[in-house]
Length: 156
Image (cartoon, rainbow, N blue to C red; front, side):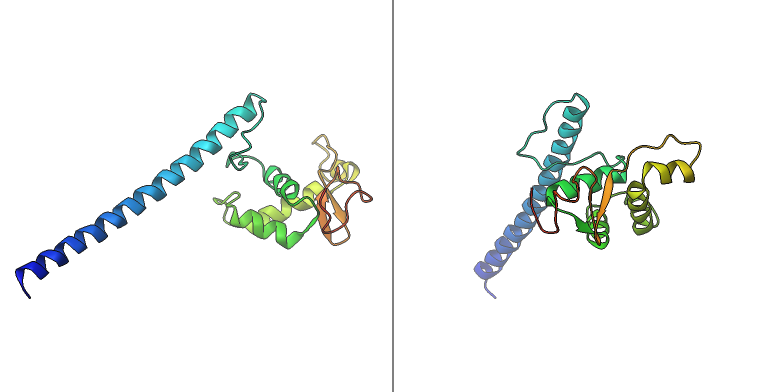
């Protein structure tokens, strides 16, 4: 191998390493931008101002599971199956710190499907609130969507 070939290989190697380094920095910058948008949305939500529509809506990681479920259902615009909701919550990293995410999400769904009467009967020491979710056949939707307003697969 001539000196010229060795020099060309060295330059090509440096270029590849630089490309990889720049790609890593771009991923970090994109991650920082996404986190910053979430933070800004949370601040605006606290101040009851509209959320910037150009950024995707994100809740604080400490938000209750039901808030994520309601956001997901709103995005979908129609009732979804239990499994679809659970899988989506897991893929979004909802309560990722919990040792059994699936069980915790299922418990949240079950609780928010209960009527006020069922809640007050089961938990006497807690003031029962109206259900936030409702069954539409085998699917789950927002309680505010009355049965006649939503059918599976129908967007609002």
